[in-house]
Amino acid sequence: MTTATGYAPNRTLPLRVEFVRQFKRRRTLGMFALLLALPWVLVIAFQIGPQSSAQGQSALRMSDLATQSGLNFAAFVLSVSASFLLVVAVALFCGDTVASEANWSSLRYLLAAPIPRDRLLRQKLIVALGYSAAAVIVLPLMGLLAGTLAFGWDDITVPGTGETIPAFDVLPRFGIVIGYALVSQLVVAALAFLVSTMTDSPLGAVGGAVGLWIVCTILQAVEALGVLREFLPTFWNNAWTDALVPELDWSGMAKGASVSVTYAAILIAIAFRRFRHKDVTS
Picture 1 (cartoon, rainbow, N blue to C red):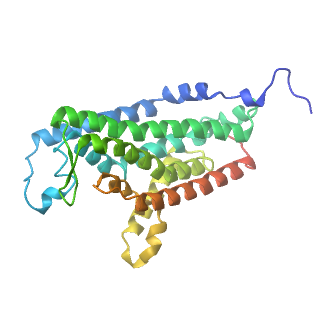
Picture 2 (picture 1 turned 90 degrees about the vertical axis):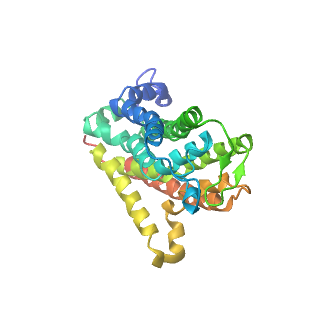
Picture 3 (picture 1 turned 60 degrees about the horizontal axis):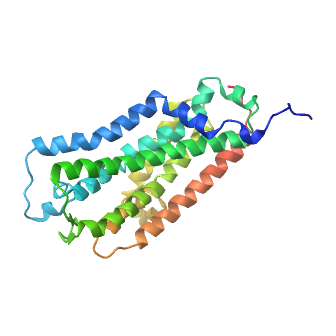
């Protein structure tokens, strides 16, 4: 079998082309607009709402400490977003990859170009993970900016104990927080990507991933499952809070990262294996 002169499989579908294509889509711009606007909406809500009391155990909740400093506010923004909004954002970027091409009836033409199937999936996955990482990063950073401008730069107050940690000491740990948030979302990304290779409906891929994440969240609340809950990816979703305590604790984040990476690797491997032998008609 001969190939066309000048054809190089490793030059098909360059990353820069795919990045630009995805950036120009309305769902990309709309999602980033929402993520960037949310911290400011929360700032306004705190400013116009009644101020919570600084006394009693209720003041040790993360929501009551949000206005203590920019770092506290950024932690609050991440805590209220990690379980749903960021899940939707990651599922949107990763679940819309292959399914959207199939929905537009352009997938078979891409493969006929010809773009090798593994390369098509790899390029799509890299771009989707890039935008997902950007989404997870910009939200807490914008929260830090909005919180600092609104509530000042001060030491962070630890929820639950009321202890304080110097702001410049905890700032490097905030990088750990964001890094762990990225790792914890890998399961959502891999699941949405797998479903995207199985359906022609982008909404179905996104909804399927979000729906399964919600099911895991519900199962996590069933105490009768005992230690089995620790194998659910949602169980360790908030383990990043261990980085914002006086004595940094890695145990929860290590377990959560191992669970997330393991599930993600398995799901992505299944996606590649299935798509490699799939009869593409759309």
